[in-house]
Length: 115
Image (spheres, rainbow, N blue to C red):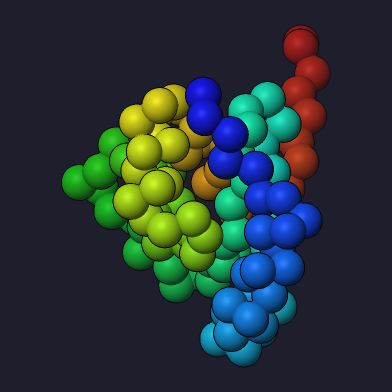
């Protein structure tokens, strides 16, 4: 997989844009770094109305709901580049969407106990 990490240099280059995003989405701009793949994303954390609209759409499969949430939230890289990333590894929307939901504060850790 191609390297899509955000270097310190790239982060400095993006500073004006990041400030703009922070003004548009106060306290809702975050960077997601995938642990096993060389991918970093800057995303807006979804609000409740966006998650509701996405996850209550019964016309979409669970995978497509995750993908749609990612597409709605990714600020960097550009959507065309994000689509290339997904074309390289189509399973990435699931952990990214999971992290976005967790960042939104609507996910809780749960445990199971075998009975």
